Length: 109
Image (cartoon, rainbow, N blue to C red; front, side, top):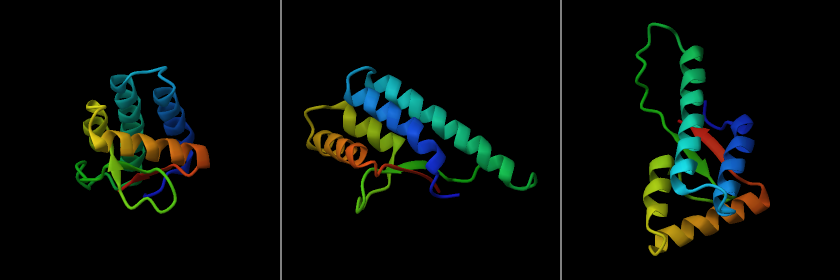
């Protein structure tokens, strides 16, 4: 299970709400964590019952075509925590670019 297109609209809505200042960073992270929990649940249902529950997989995002990063929820939280930091501006621009071009991808690996 890598790319999860059925979670893209949910993630897009969360990122759009954040960019539009309708939710704060804590709410954005909470919504992304909810997606991650659902994906983890779906993944464990697909696996054999005898396999260990700890897979080491994480939810990550690719914001636009050619995006070289696998941006995790932790990365988003760390980078957006300080709006004055250059990584914050770069990430916000990447999110906005990806949403505008409808290229956001949700992955779990």
